[in-house]
Image (cartoon, rainbow, N blue to C red):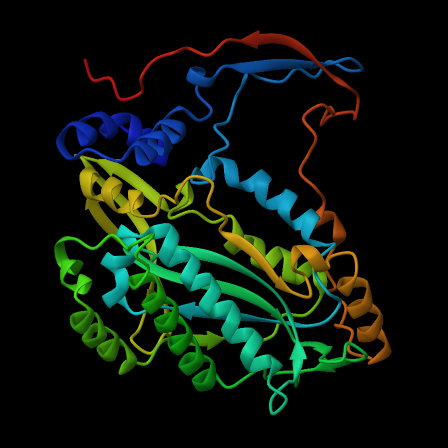
Length: 394
């Protein structure tokens, strides 16, 4: 059986048998169904023609708009870049990554929403505490965080990426305090504070009788307070990975760079090389133990394992995986962003120009506009959805 090397085609070819053998949650089934039917006759479609020239579009099948679907993220990413222009401050930014130890993986998978919230809160409070410390930057920064849960080979690996302004509002909000050009905060300090914040929040969750953590199988023993304390002690002895990448300069560069993280899914279709004999071959970045990039390598998984790994990363329904904090938090958009922009200019802390062509960062093409002459595209025909269970193997 020839299978197209796309995530949707893999689900269509192997999803039915996978669900029979291994099952899935209702949420996972919904994500699989959306991706399997995306841009196929199952969702219906449209055909357009220009009212000013001879251009006619081919049939355009509707998209599923699921945030886990690799086909649907390009347009969403472009829209996000356009919206973020209003939130990005005209100064340099740093890319900070917060990672939790793999010993927490099973607990997090059983309690996704609760533990992801703890990860967001612990990383945000760490940045606020360290950068707000008068002995360090002594300022209130602007930062946006996004949750990722995967490695290149689709293993579970929960971490938060954050873009953090290279400076912040002084604590009295009267001036802009700029960071050093190539230094935000000590990584070891960030790591220790993050570890403490996370374990403190996890302790509160474990002690919450009204909304208890799900503790079964490999982590059932953590229901015992003494065993939970021993588990925390082991985690406290580990070095938690936090690292700060080199600064990013220019609002457009920051937006475009981070858009590659905000709308990324576990695997893109570009990385899937082939599907043969029930196995999925795909590309993954290969790094040495010291983090040195060694290029791309090809991996292979049987279809069942590939699907199982992908489903690890399905988010709880409605979960917010992109969050804004500090100066750019939702309640501060109309007040603190204009103030920060004015103070950045006053402090001569403006970022160097990007040198990027603004045409590369325009919003996505409007489908109602003819790509050939700019005229108006008129709807010629509508195709109704073809209702059929994509996993029906009968």
